Image 1 (spheres, each protein chain N blue to C red):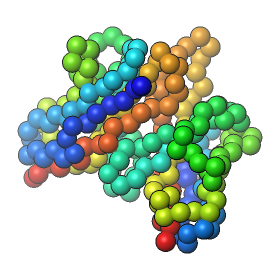
Image 2 (cartoon, each protein chain N blue to C red):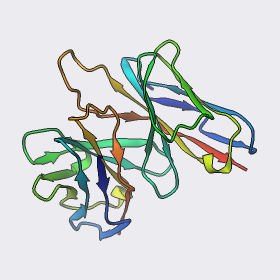
Image 3 (cartoon, rainbow over the protein chains, first blue to last red):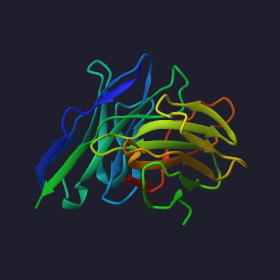
Image 4 (cartoon, rainbow over the protein chains, first blue to last red):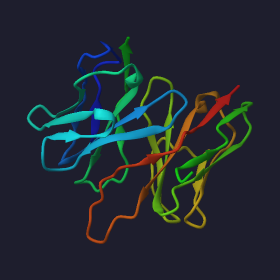
Length: 115
Length: 119
């Protein structure tokens, strides 16, 4: 079975401070990992993905994520948070070994950046 | 706008009624997905099409749910005899054709969703 876990329902951070949104995964084979963001009344938007290669992946809006195979984690990070980053963030995984075409999403983490 | 579009954006219906949602994917995408999202949860996979063929169905897709993609372009998701538990956001996503011999990256492009409220 494949799954992702987002242990924090809510993350609060002050504007200008670094932010981390945590994600751990469980798959049988090698994972494809994704982060999506959902703003109010908007669809899910792709932020970044890890397929293979460098463990540090850079994405949209200054976000990056670090793939850690030994810890089965894929935490989302940003060096300096903006108020406009406040949104709902979802981690997702695709298990390439099974050939599954769909993504399995976590339950989401609501990020609030405090001015 | 060349993104994924869904219609209607909001639907309020009474229990027992039938509802239908439409999704128009990005035109060059041959893969289309339906997900359901309830409050406080992440999107849950319902079904997947490659062109007009429905290749995967989740156990979440009960007999009251049916999805079609007759010409490999737009798709419809119909819920018959709606129940209050069907209240959710129904999300459609599409992804491009995978090159021959490739595995694809799995990135999905989502529409803004159709919110269903069953009274």
